[in-house]
Length: 260
Image (cartoon, rainbow, N blue to C red; front, top):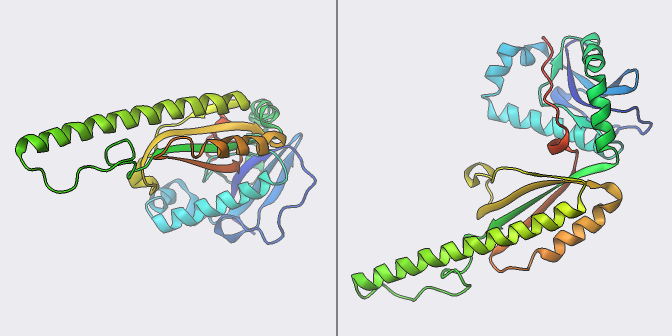
């Protein structure tokens, strides 16, 4: 099949087979391309979609972008089940196999050091949210029923609501800080990401903590149980755990696209 080479990840050679029905971006099954002590996982994609000019237009097409991201992630997830991949940026493409091999050779030292650091480890994501309905008075109770009887009562209620909201946010930040410290102690590494915008994430509540943790596979069950034990510690606060993922947050890679 002709076309550009789309690179999903770099890893060490592995013996396990990928899922037989696995397809990648543009429907092409991924394959391995070996160069010395590294393997690139690649598939063919149409040049019409992945040249620099084409990508500028395609990235404005949300349906195409979502489908490409899903296919990319499916391949990374399949790799994570059988080895430790170093995932590359979505839409990393090269003209041909030779271009992929040149990239691996030029970055061989960096790739090997990073793979050594990530070997046998996965990423877990933990988010903490302050629920939108977390106690109308900030303490799990309700605001007084009915309309304020006077302007003064309205101002008093508004002041109390503001103060209660500040207190609840402070408790949420303190809880998130304690949780992050506990989880970071159990992980090999941790990353704090910027809080998510609910308009983009679709999640309800205010995001207090958005963190990633690099955890050994053999300690992952213990890590998950630790998170589960904290979920009901503070009323009005929601803890979400995702993973295990390939270690995107700890890869330290931002490879340049090959010339298409």
